[in-house]
Length: 107
Image 1 (spheres, rainbow, N blue to C red):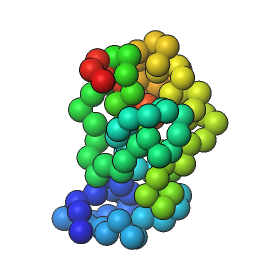
Image 2: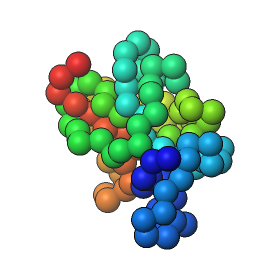
Image 3: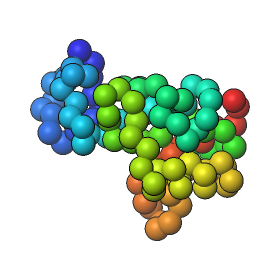
């Protein structure tokens, strides 16, 4: 079992969940490992929020949990493309929006 930031509002303090309890609509962080950033198989699940923010390489994405792989929606694919172009976490609009794509300076 792992401590989880996923569904934090639903968890009581010091309660933890097992990966098998994540339902298909939960969101989770996935680190980019290598390959095509537009393919789910290029990411690995992470129980931790990323420490990176900006740069011209994909760091991690916040996506729907789908059997251990991220579910890449059309919006998320658009955010990934924008991140690669701008080097900034995405989305940038509206101001203060929840970020779903984080970037990094190193590959």
